[in-house]
View 1 (cartoon, helix red, strand yellow):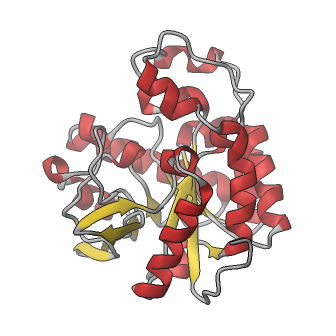
View 2 (cartoon, rainbow, N blue to C red; view 1 turned 180 degrees about the horizontal axis):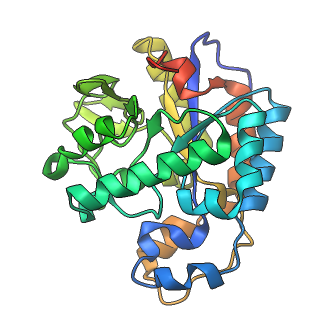
View 3 (cartoon, rainbow, N blue to C red; view 1 turned 180 degrees about the vertical axis):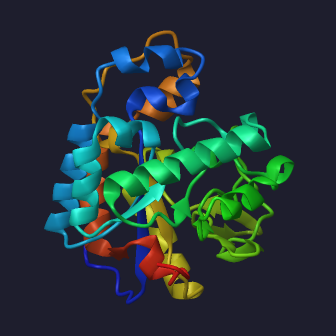
Length: 284
C-alpha cells in the first residue's frame, strides 16, 4: 500500500485560505468584530504549505479570502510568484445562502478586485464558503458569472448537515452562460455519493480511505479529482475556541496533528496541479 498509485491523471489540489477563527462552525462563538483582535496563524500556515508544495513539485489553487489578502499582501504575492493559482473565497467568509443578491454580488466583486490588485493576476475562480450554494440559491451562479469569474467550485454533491447538493452532477458542468461549476470530488458506491475530496473527511477517516477513493475516480471513471483542505488543518497548536459543542470540537480538532503527514503521502501518491490547468478552464 506504500507504492505510488499507478495513475497518470493529474488531479486538482485546492486550499481554502482562511484562519481557524473564521470557519462557519464558529460563527456563533466568535464575533466578526473581534477578528482583528484574534491571534492570526494563517500566514505561517500558508508559508508551511508553500514549502511543502515546492518540496513535492506540486501546484495548487488557493481560494483566498479578501480579508486575508488585505492584511497579508506579501503572502498573496508569494502564492502567485511560486506558480500557484490565486482564486476567490469571497471577502469575509459569509455563506452565500445567508446573503441576498446585492450583498452576495458586492462580496464576490470586492474580493475579486482586491485579489487581482494585490496579486497582479487575473482571478477567474470562486468557491463559496462552506459550499453554500444549493437548490435554494442557484441564482448565485448568475451573480458569479456577472462578476467576471469563469468557474465556480462551490458545490459538494454529498449529503451533509451544513451543506451539500447530493443530486448535483459529480463532474464539471455549465451552470449558466460563461460559468462552469467544478464540484469537489465524490465516488459513487451502492448508488450513493461518498466524499472523496478532502476537508474534514480527510482527517476523520484513515488515509487509505481517501487514497482509495481518489484512485477509484481516476481509474474507474477516468476523471481527475479535485481535493481541498484549509491551512488551519496542519496547525495542531492553534488556540482552542471555548464553548463549542462536542460535534464541532470533533470535526475541527480531531487528527490535526496527522494532517501534514497525510498531505505528504497524498502529494507522493498522486500528481497535482491548479484547477485552471487541470480542467483547462476558458480564460486561464
